[in-house]
Length: 215
Image (tube, rainbow, N blue to C red; front, side):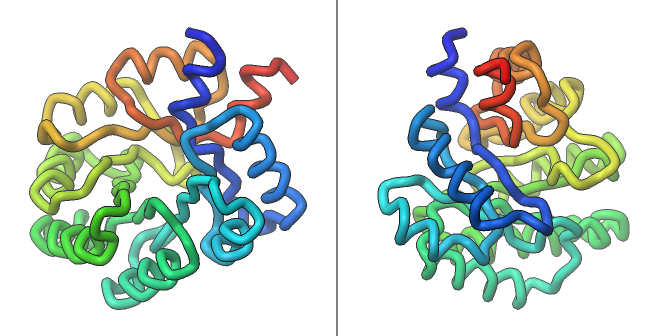
């Protein structure tokens, strides 16, 4: 695939706890130059990026990276991010609820955040590295039934990132309207192309420019 086509799948990402404005600015300049799908940034930078780059598509994260904040706080975080100018929200599910078999509660939380985002895109991070196959399938159903736009593999801060077997499992169990985002550990062009060919509509990576421009 041509570089330009690969970039169109990329949520160009910078989410480390110590990310500086200089790094965010560089990320945004690269996103404009290479026409990535979006930038995925900490919520504290959303308003500033919206002002500095008014045409850039901005994604931010909610309940990140552990997911066990209560629903009210996730809703407040989402509302503020949207008010600041975010176009897309990547939320982390409550993995504690999953481990306690409270799948319906997870679905309800996702539905409430989707109601908050409205026509804006909601991606749901299920953090596959912590889940059993049964739990992954249950989350495919929860994401689908709650009306979210995407299911996403990973935060990139867990014990492992995206894995092809999880993409194929998701593809088998999500609804027709749900898209897939692979994130975490995408380090090569071959990784990028393989996930796209497997059915991913987005790729979350901080390494796209390094990979594709061979820096």
